[in-house]
Image (cartoon, rainbow, N blue to C red; front, side, top):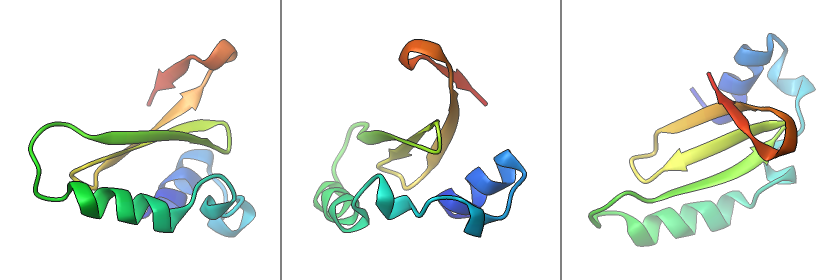
Length: 77
């Protein structure tokens, strides 16, 4: 599943109802960043906030979505 589809499922809403992912991050920059790191060792990830949820994309192209709580803390789903 894509990030937006997963987030929509989590929020029980239509993916079209969510802000586009490119409104909070630059997909081309993320692709470029991960393509430079492809094949290297070690953990590498990027975290950003979208629709009040922390989205973390890992170098293995796995991602997690955490619900934002108060004062920048996140609750793991």
